Each structure stands twice: as structure tokens, then as C-alpha cells.
Amino acid sequence: MNNLKDRLSHAVAPGGRPTSDYDLNADVELPAGRKLTPAAVLVAVTAYSDRPELLLTKRSSRLSHHPGQIAFPGGKQDPTDADATATALREAEEEVGLPDMITMTVGTMDPHETVTGFLITPVIALVRSPFDPVPETGEVEEVFRVPLDHVLDPTAFQVQSRRWRGRRRFYYAVPWGPYYIWGATARILRAIADRVT
Image (cartoon, rainbow, N blue to C red):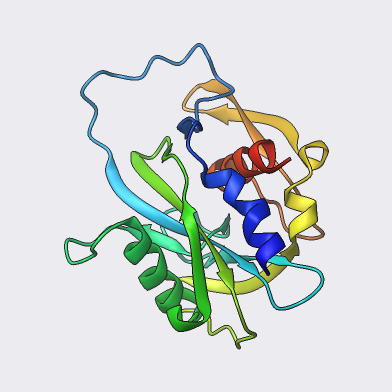
């Protein structure tokens, strides 16, 4: 577990830089004074086996925002949350049933700005023992795991594009089996991969 913690600590070490959904789209001018909603996600990595895995969710296809997309457990920061770590741990317990007593926080990364107006703080944590995920009814369709080595390999990432609001938008994707991991989730993973490797 200590080797894994040391490896992931590179992702939260000082000297990083904030990321955004606009990183591959240099022609986009962001409006000054824009208001961003604070949020946090939990980058939860299993630390109880020889092959660590990353915990991800597939959002319900019935949601009005980002239906069916792959995401980290997480959400908006509540006024009662002490900080981003508290938000990420609370959301992970609500969305996938991850008890915070079996997690060990490694640290927080620089924030990530999304095209939908959120400023997301990724919180990296180790899951120290197995647990049975319980997807939150109505919000989470599926909880699954991806080998950590796959998402820490920069060569596994692709740059893809699609039309969005009348212009071509480029973004990272890191597919795994039937799961299409892209957008903010893939961008955050790419930032981790770049720093850890």
C-alpha cells in the first residue's frame, strides 16, 4: 500500500496546474468574472490487491445532465462540507456506498474547470479493504472498476472531437472495454497519468 500511496502522491504534489475542458481548445476565450460552482470528485483506488483498480460509475440514463456518462463519484460542495475532501467522501458514500472509514486520503489535485460551469477538486484516496458497492437509485446505473495501470498509461489516451454548440470541441478519451471514458473524467485521469509517470 505504501508504494501505491507514494506513486499517487506525485499527482497531488505541489507544482501542478489547474486543468479544464478547454485544454485542447486554445481558440476558446473564457469570459472574465465567470461564476463557477465548487464541486469535488473522489478518485478512489483499491489498495488491497496486487492489481490496484480505479472505481468509476456510469450515470443513470434518466438524468437530465450527463446521462449515461462515466464519472467519478462526486458532486457539488454543500455549505455544510468542511472542504473538498469532505464533499468527495460524502458523495462517494451516497453514490456508491463507499464507507469513508476504509479510505485513506492521499491528497487533492489542482482544480478542473468544466464547460458546464463547475470547478471540480479531484481528491485521491486509497480504498483499504473490499466493500460491496451500492449504486444510488436514480443517479448511478452501474459501479465498475478499471485497472489503474490502464488509466495511468499516457499512451492509452486518445484525442477525439465532436461538434458542441456549433463548433468542434476536442477532448481526451481513455476507453476501457464497453466503457467510453471521456470529457472531464478522462482529462483528470490524463493529468494524473502525466504527473505519476
